[in-house]
Image (cartoon, rainbow, N blue to C red; front, side, top):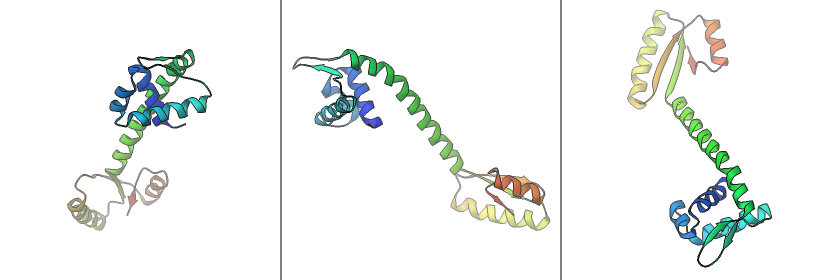
Length: 146
């Protein structure tokens, strides 16, 4: 069972219309039918009563809907949060340096050149003694140290 099938099920449970669900999910009506049939086989129960004129949830379908709706909502939140974290990680660069005159000069030059290539990256400088920088690097607080 995958989340796409569950999302299709949830949409169909709300719309009670195979054509509308196909349109909402941007797939064919046949794909909706196949996904629901596959889910029903997996659960070993019918989720919908189907006739030519209407579609309704079975009692099992109603219980499955009530149980899965908060799960998918939480899943979507977790995916969104993970993507936000991944984006911020990719756009942050933390550099630890000792603060010597050469470090300041070299890092400024490197940052200047780096920003030409990756202007979207936010660069943070942290000034620590060498032992502290190594510890912060190992803990993941710094991406690079000099």
